[in-house]
Image (cartoon, rainbow, N blue to C red; front, top):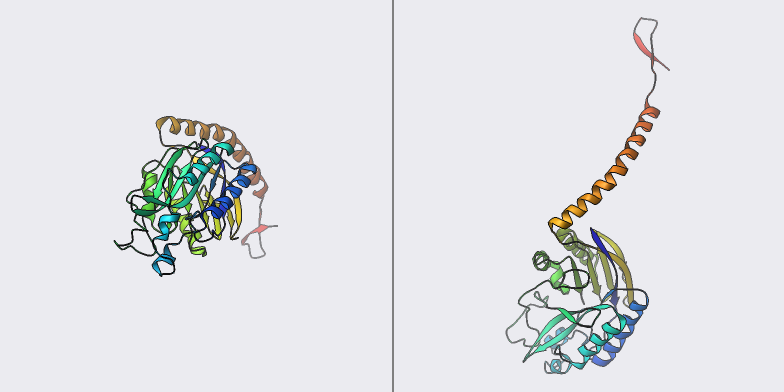
Length: 294
C-alpha cells in the first residue's frame, strides 16, 4: 500500500546574508510549485541566510553577523512562510539558521498546508567539523520523525546524507519518507548516497540541493536535474506504516492481482510450449546408425 504525493524540489543559489531577497525568491518559487500542482515543496539548506558558515570560519564574515540573519521560530520571516503555506494549501520544507538563546543551529523545518510547524531538525554531522567556540554553528543533538498530512516524515541536512546511521534514526522512529535540504556536493557520488539511503530504509526521498535536485521513489530515481536554478517535479509513493491491518490489506490486494495474473501467465506459457515443441522423425544412416530426420 502506497500513497502517491506530487512533490517539488527547488534549487537556486541564495545571496549571502540577503535575508529579504532570498525570502522573496523562495516565496516566488514556492508559488510556482503550487501552481504546478505540488502538494509538498522542498528547498535547500540555509536558503534564507545563504549558508555563510564557511565564510565565518575563513574570516571573511564576522561571526556577529549571524545574529542578524539567524531566526527564531517566532520570527516574522517564519510567520510569512507559515501564512504562505496556508494560502497555497501546500506543505513547505526548507533550511535556515535558527537562533536559540546565544547559539545558532543549521536547521530545517516542515510547515504543513495549514501553516503549522510540524517538524524541526538540527544538522547532526558537519562537514567542517565542530569546535566548542563555534556558537554560530552548533551540533544537533537528536533526530525524530514527525507527523505530516502524508504520514510520518524525517529530515536530514546535506552532509548527514553520507552517514547511514543518521538517515536510519527517523525511519526507526516511524518516518515513511525523508527530506534532504542541501547546499553541498553536486557530484554523482551524492546521487548514489541518496539512492542508497532510500533503498536501505525502503522509503522515498526528496533532496533539494543547490545545483542538483533529486527525487527517489520505490528505490529508483524518478526525477533529477543538475540546473542551478530549477524546480523539479515528481511523484513519490509513500509506504503505509507497518500494522496488522495494513499487512492484511496489502496481502489481499496482492492475492486479487494474482488471481488475474496466474491464468494469463499459464496461457502464455502453454502457447510458447506448443510453438517450441517439434516432431522429430527417426531413421538410420547407411551404416545403420540412428539419426534424426529434418
